[in-house]
Image (cartoon, rainbow, N blue to C red; front, top):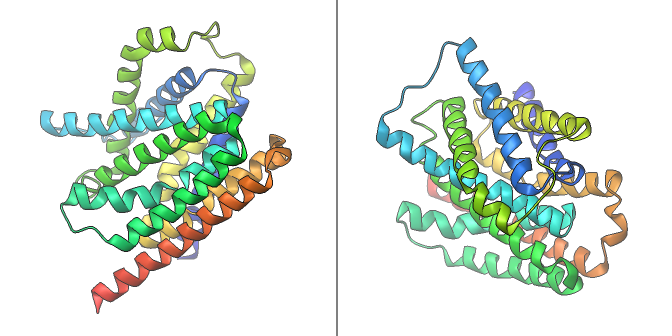
Length: 293
C-alpha cells in the first residue's frame, strides 16, 4: 500500500510540471500539443508492441474513444493557450474548477438527479475566479480560456469513466492520443490562419522539454497512476489530485518567476477556489459514505 501511495503522489507531482513546460517550450500551443501527442502515442505504441497487446476494437468502440481523444486534445490546447495568454498560475488555478464542473456534467451524462449543494459549490468557486479576473484585466482572456479548458477536462474525464472498466488503460490512451493528433493535424490549415507562426520545428531546447513532457509527464504518469489505482480508491486519487494546481503554482513561482504577479486579488481568489474544492471533496466523501450505510 505504501508503494501505491508513493506512485500516486509521484504522478500528481509530475503532472504539476506540465504547466511549467508549457511556459518553457517556445512553440505555440497547437504545435506544442501536436508534438506531445506524437511522442506520447509513439511511446505507448512501442510499449504495447513489447507487451504484444496491440488493441483490437470494434468500429463503434473506436469512434467513441476517438471522440474522447479529440476532447482531450482540445483540453490540452486550451490549457497551454491559457498559460501563454496569462500565466502558469492562472491556468493552474482555473483547473481547480474541474471537480466542480464534473459535479454538473456527471448527472447529465449518467442521467441522474442533480445535487443542488454541488451547484452552490460551483457558484462559490466562480466568485473566486471572478475575484482573480478582476484583479488583473490583462489576464482576462487567459482566464476565460482556462475555464474552457477545465470544462473540457471535466467532460472527457466523466465520459472516460464510462469506458475505463471495459478496456485496458494504455489501449484507451493510444486511441485517444492518436485520434487527437490526427484531428489536430486536420485543423492546422484553419488554426494557422487564426494563430500564424514562423516556428514549426522545435529547436534542441524545446525538443528536450517536449521529450520530458511526453515521456515523463504523460506516459510515465499514466502508468504510475494506473498501478496506484490497483491499491488506492478512486476517491483517494481524486482528493490527492487537488494538490496538482498547488504544485504547479509553486513550480511557477520557483522556476518561472511568477511570484511577483501573485497580487492580493489573485491570492484571495485562489484561496476561495482551493477551500471550495477541498470542502467539496469532503462533501463528496460524506455522500459516498452515507450511501454505503
